[in-house]
Image: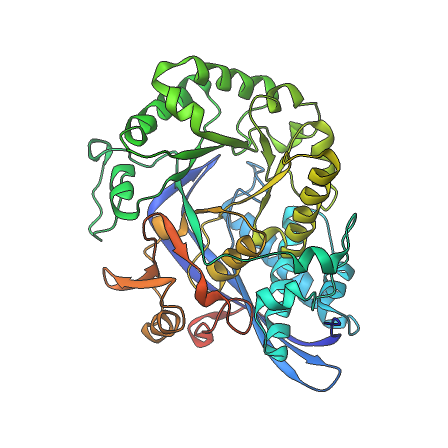
Length: 452
């Protein structure tokens, strides 16, 4: 398929508030609520066809910019400004391919790149709808017009093979209770609250464990988690998320050494797949990490702030990079192609991608993020939005019903709301192969605040 060129006619920005059912502590912030941003875009192809597309993402504080001097409202304002700047830039640009629009408006930085990342997704959604094709089909045929370094884009994209399901990797936050004895205040919504209850309800085999940056405290926390996970009959797998809490590689290396030496953590340590962004971004790409990476793979997340970040990290010993739709879908595809190229050149399977969450909410945001991870061939994805937020409980009933009807494999109705369905630790993805970018239903725009 030749990549169609199109003009961007309209871009609308909207918001709605999201309240968490239980606090989520990651790194330096404890999140209890945040706005969710929506982008609504209209395009026109050269033959006159027009179509509308959408994207959504939580305005998560203290992740894009962790400056302690900034308040949550300051962080929200940063991300809103990024969206507003992207809206202006895309609207004045000439007709181009989807990837051409993205390249013309590329900016480095997690905050600066947030706006373009959402607009790119909304434009791709509109393009897929104009062509009457799915996200998977459009990307595999390179309808976006991607150009990739080190490989032929058409061959690479055509070789991607989305699956019918993906394993859910459960997040254990720093405040999450492990057993019923850890619960300070019991919630009345009937949903799992402790790790033990999560295991019984969802049956996950993959887990993401948050670290606090204090080795002694982290060891005790991990031991409590291991006491619950080790009771499972089958194997389980874990990733450790440092959330930039260690200042240098020596700190995280010492934690890993203590983990391997602690008999309480024998099974857990043997189950760790990789360590995610353990070092503060100001130091993460400053020194070689190869000695530790030779023992356990290291992955960048917050340090993945530009198209050049993963090659820089590779030179220092990192072998993994995360995919998050909020960092840009095309950057994820570029980095996935790099993994293939580098592995081919080195004759192994050393370089890899993970799929990580940012409390992604059900509906457009969840579905686009899942479809991207699935296209990239990632076998398990961190999912935490369903645990910290009560599904679609705060949304209009008609919107909930529309998404459930359009995606009955992905959602269920329980405890009074439509929510993500996780069965035997897996998420069914079959219905994401619909026309558009993985969504056959639309949000209720009238229920949101129009920003501009």
